[in-house]
Length: 223
Image 1 (cartoon, rainbow, N blue to C red):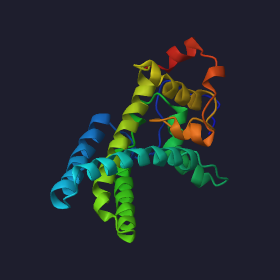
Image 2: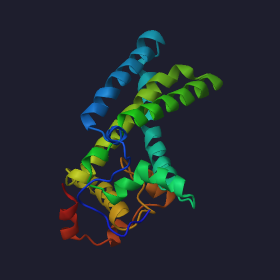
Image 3: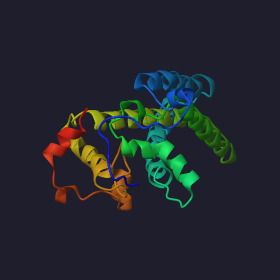
Image 4: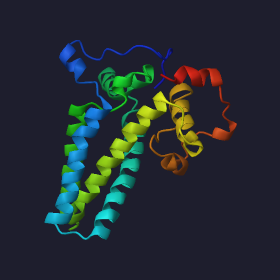
């Protein structure tokens, strides 16, 4: 989605109700505090109750992290950038993600808020659980989901960092530039945030070698 003006200051008003408006905001520490205990419980169930050995736990945990990166890419590309002629549908898209493109430096909306993220997490776990039962691999669901949640926390933290700071390491520069171009050039590429792997695989990666760096603009993007 494209906006005539991108606001580097301020915040979008999504609901008239101040209570609903409050529910659209998130503090990164709150999100980590919510999900780290869940991750620990899921790993405990995998090891002490289901009795999976350490190798299988690690394998399914890492697989969950990798699966998150694909989930992130698909959701960002096809859900958060969904285009419709319906005004109601586009209003939903704006609430989900469009406001972030109009106000990309709004620190309170760089993580998904607690309530919708919990609803999404429960939905994903339910789907994984019943899929596991269908294919008789339900013993892996808990450690896989733990990895999926850690992938989400890494993604959210990376998203916050990309909008807040310069890349701490040279090898991370492509992540920063890919996402900044997604916001400030056009939004039809650069859908990966925690990884550029799927952008490279599906041809939605920016040609970073041929994209000129505007140092003035870069400074404007920092908090």
